[in-house]
Length: 366
Image 1 (spheres, rainbow, N blue to C red):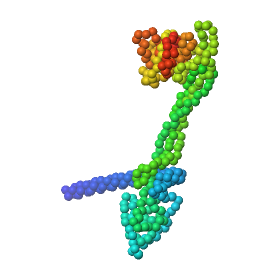
Image 2 (image 1 turned 90 degrees about the vertical axis):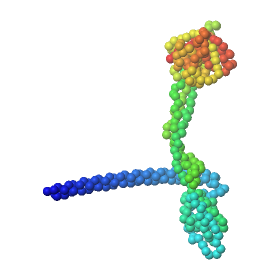
Image 3 (image 1 turned 60 degrees about the vertical axis):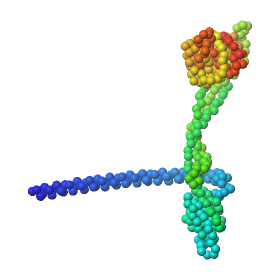
Image 4 (image 1 turned 180 degrees about the horizontal axis):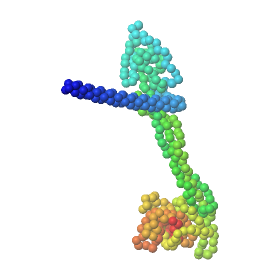
């Protein structure tokens, strides 16, 4: 009885051991298949890349060959891809007077004792294959001479794709719907993108030069469109009490981001509120309180009265100056101890002096 139980227990252990071995074998096979699949994928990717390089070279080889010829015409000769190596002849060794020649290729230098033959014969004897585009310091058909050192440098290629930004253009269109000096931003510009493919050349593994192979616009730039007014402005001359034409040009260089409809006196028809007060002028460049570059059209205000970002239209009360569309972008030093309500930016000191201090009408558009 005891003997049979031991025998059964021993059989059970053997069965478990066999099961474990089978599981391990199955796991090993799966692992091997996985590695094989990865190697195949890597090989396929490499093959695809080599074909891609070959295709690009085929389409651009004349340009690449010309450039290489210019770079190395004094010291080396570029082997044409369309010419095959001549069939080598066995080197004659030991017949007649021998002389020494050398071969330098793939980081190795080897010496041979010969008494005749060509460069092609020597390369064949050394087991050195000349690939398309490799550089040789002698022609393959040149005869060997005493002390000659044949030097071969490997030329390889890689493709590199670069994404380049294409700047948008600004188109200005004239319109009689706006007054002289007024501008309206109809559409904002947007940069495009271009994909440039370069052939990067390496000699013995060292990068030498790249060549532009192709360019493709992947995203077209959107032109900026600005309407420029051509309509003459009618200005009310209060001192005289008559209405006449004015060829005044707006001081502001900032394109309007809102549509402004002006009346016969050159003043906005629609606005949220109107402020009448004293204005001064300043210049000097720099950055405004809102982080923008100072320019005509970005004015200084008391942000407690006119919040930053407010869109304004400013004209002098006497009609002698049209500052035009502008934005509240800076803080004026007048806010602490002055009756000034706005400080207008000009490009030069002379313009500021000419403006001086004037009463203006400030139309808050937004």
